[in-house]
Image (cartoon, rainbow, N blue to C red):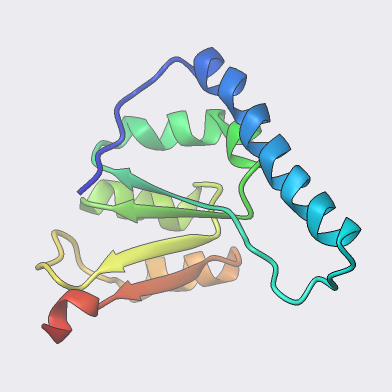
Length: 129
């Protein structure tokens, strides 16, 4: 599993424009070759939240995250799940069902997240083995 290591925001901001430029170049090449946009490739980032302090860092990094089409968070504790439902700026909350959840999916929190427009992604591929 990939773990997010805190990095200096300025170093991330320096690398992001190159990724955005690569995506724009790809789109320009497709259009110039006469292809209609049949398939749009979206960019996505999933942030695994292991500590509640990462939530505030995530909200502070909106300049970087806004370069992605989909921002997902995967909480690993009760506190990070509460944060994800109540205040984090994300599109998806990932729930990994291949392991025992370290928190309960409480209806008030789920309702709060849905009212904020968040969607839930249930990961179950590992259960099919």
